[in-house]
Image (tube, rainbow, N blue to C red; front, side, top):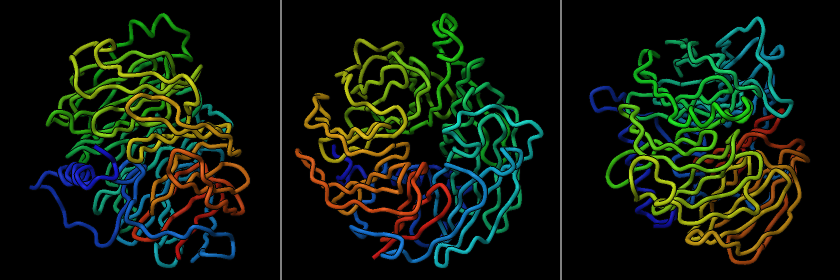
Length: 426
């Protein structure tokens, strides 16, 4: 089943609708929305009509400077754009809200203070996890520095949780995921490894499940036990499952109870890319070290299921930061070093692999019959046409590069560079 198919989009819409129980669901915010990292359909906005080319002077409706440093991706709903940022070297963690129509920064809320921020990698920020908009609430996550729920009306803090303490070594990474009345968070540090669900109304822990790979990981050096995963919720055989990429193991968990359902082992750690699916297989990047991409069957044995579920392995060209995008029966992925590959999703075989240059941390988007790839350096975006040969349609340049992945609402693209926020449209 293709991610471009109406059936697949209906499936994801249904999962989003069920994210709120009927008894607790407030009125939906008006207008188009992109409420979570990579949007409602795994980085797809197929119906959008976007410009092919842009620059600082072309197809930019507005440009807004942003305070601080933050790599979290913008999320959009109800005419608001939300992001997070860090000031004063991570001592002050903020949520930012810009007006979708004007670009004006209308709310700048300090969420947490840290007397001594933990260490982070020079490439990372203290505000890298992407928030989630859920009607009139915003969920922000700063890794072990804290998670909070804010009112989207005025930025008021509704609750906070600062109990999820792990040693990430390189700063916060993975984003939370929302399932019904639960906020799911992957917590895979050098010291502790577990998945957790918070009550979205109170911030209290509903369930906490230690990783089954802990005995195996305890035999590894501490810096090879960590991961920066984001739970991905898929409907598998009629049941929702949360897929999490931890160090050396993919976990499938019942999002309601935290019970581990099945797992697949792979070589790798410090996992960043999200799992993506075409409805038959789930595609997982194995992390740092020697990154590979694996095709894993959604149907198979419970428990430790490496032998029964792994359909194929591709050791070449896999990203360790950017999440691939699936278009039809092809997977498109780009490494941090600017190697772009197209794979056959059923076999994992490379259709083509080319160097496009750049440095990629953000994830590609599929929209308007094109794929958009945003480099972290030089402000360059490469636009290609999906197909069995590389066809570059355009190369666009802004003043700075993207660590964040853009959002698409209607026929508008919201692009966060390292210093500014842009609204790009025809």
